[in-house]
Image (cartoon, rainbow, N blue to C red; front, side, top):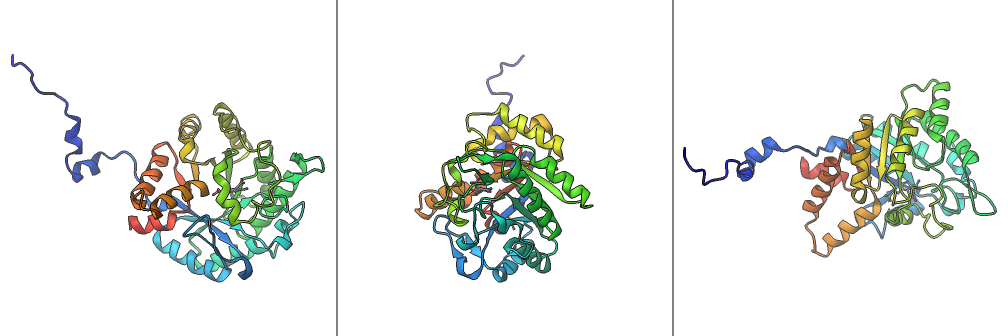
Length: 329
Ligand code: PBG
């Protein structure tokens, strides 16, 4: 019997060289798992977004170019958000129901420029309302669920008819997934996918996005009567269960990095395609630190996105999608 004076298991053996680290790596990040959110605007509102350096509001012409580049880089899809002229906004967001509106035209533009690129369209009223809420606001300051759902139903149908591959309700009204699934089926749109923002939290990380779509200054109050309390996790599972039962194809957790525990629980509990949204505030934090030279942008971005994948996300909406696809190329 020899006396064992060495560790039988040396964990560092598996880390000693790139070849073995590569072979035992458990999680990977690929361009095909990324979705690029894009802001769309008329010429007047187009241009840089101060709080989201590197992102911009695209005119339709620039959107076509961007779509082609993203497709070439292997990014699977884009998620579109309108930055409307304030004159088009009103209390009930009627511009959301204009079949010749900005987003329906943007869908056409993208489909002509890059047919293979998936087009995901947000279903919510906040970019269209003059009070910045996702639904209809009553005189006494409440968000009316069922009248809001009625408008969201019409908006979703319009977007599907305009050619959206995926409609993504981000409004957090009760019952909207079932209502939208029903209207799509009745219109014989069997293939339109629904990506449900199921566990969407009332987060302070959405600030720069609200700058980008011009809803920040206008926002009256907050969204805590419909978006989730950041303190809750069981509630996220109940929300996801409802959306699956109502006909969602994919579910989403949002924001991403501060909510990795939610992503993991949702993935484990339902085994559904689970998406995560690395939101505007997460982008702004990394971007600002990198711009100051405090963090290595490429390394922290890849680490953050890998962590979101490791937590259980199948795909990630990230403003870094294009850059990352380029880096991974
Ligand atoms: C609104 C919507 C928001 C985002 C996506 N859809 C903002 C909000 O709920 O106020 C935020 C995305 C981001 O911060 O990047 N329906």
